[in-house]
Image (cartoon, rainbow, N blue to C red):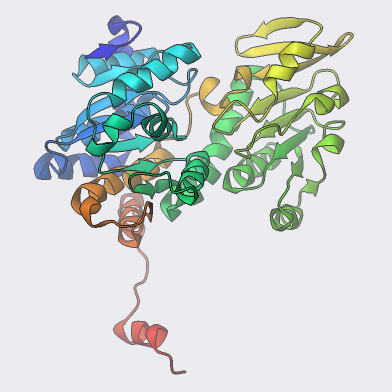
Length: 414
């Protein structure tokens, strides 16, 4: 069962997935374990994650464990058609294609969910949101789910606080083996991969404005500094602002940064971060992109309305004339720049994140009926198991506590 653009694209997608497999030892080891244990036998999994090769390999690992997979993307511009075709050719249920309309995007999500799925693997919360708003009849089949992103967890916390969340969700993003590496190193590298390959411009010596100094913002700022940029951070959190200062970056309001910046990267998870008044302050040639989950951080609706003219400057670059003969340029339509304009995070990084996903899904199968809370932290033993496997594959050994040291740390006596 599939709804994709072109099944004939499958061979190139197969090669991409094979490359990921060769560079993801954690997932390979889980695939071997799952093939023997079949922890997902009889389980239907609905998955909405950016549909490229690394996600595809996660789907194959879960399928190896016995799961029947129902797959769609989590962004209209991040699906790779050859990868979707390769999964469909292998018999997985796929509903996704590149550059679908918003209506088609939500139609694909609906098709996935109308299969009585037991586990939800979400990236941003669109699956969970539709279940609670439009497909309530499907909720009784769900034992729980896993959320990949900061943005998705923000939505889940709001639902839980309003007592609307109907089943337990594991907060995968908050696991140490996810956000410390995926959000910081994965986002840091992949954002600049997307910007550099799309613009073909130098970064060194230019001003880079990073909106938001969470783990993703830290990674983007660090890599910009490494490329020789002069980095400015904008923040609303005073503690994070101090942290950015102590990390060596300038900190100021967006309205002031708008006058200076050459590159702007939003990574806040919030809407309306760069708005009309900021656009009007920007110098001719400023380049804007978004690394947050949804395309709301840059106010694209206002920008399109106010523009005197537009130009398709290069693939994935649209210029907007905001003042006479003064253009600002937006990458990837304001959607996730590392996926709309690139291949997303490096394989080795997603190896850790998706290992957490796979083991969290297994945890739900084993313990879902016991869970009373709606928001579930990734169990510490799962986090540590992934870290220890990663160290093993890196060929690194570390010390362990002796019994005496453990007793000392657990004692209330000095």
